[in-house]
Length: 149
Image 1: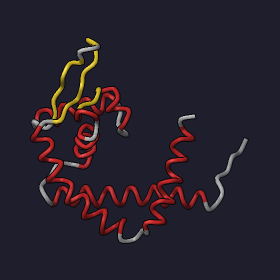
Image 2: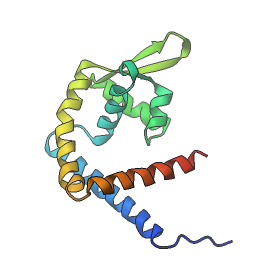
Image 3: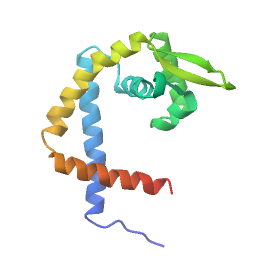
């Protein structure tokens, strides 16, 4: 059975993928130019930072990011070696481990955010109106929710 994706949805999907790849590339380059770690480090640090009590179970952290559990373990090891994160055993479950952000990890987030935000302002905020941003967010939220049903 043939299933087609018709216009304008196919164009919207391609535009989403292209915009994502282009923006991520621009952010990555800006971080390199500022002698800062890669965007993946920011994503992990921010996910922990925004969690209640600034700690999250490793399994939940992996689920919240677009990275495999094995990939997260390797990345987390690098962040831990840099002193940005740590592991704490979960008191209620001997097998679970919490990822925690260190004070140095919080400082790194504060150094990375202005670079990240500058690229977002230049390439996204300046080209997408607040109304368009709300529409994009709502549409993408619905698409994400459809994947969980």
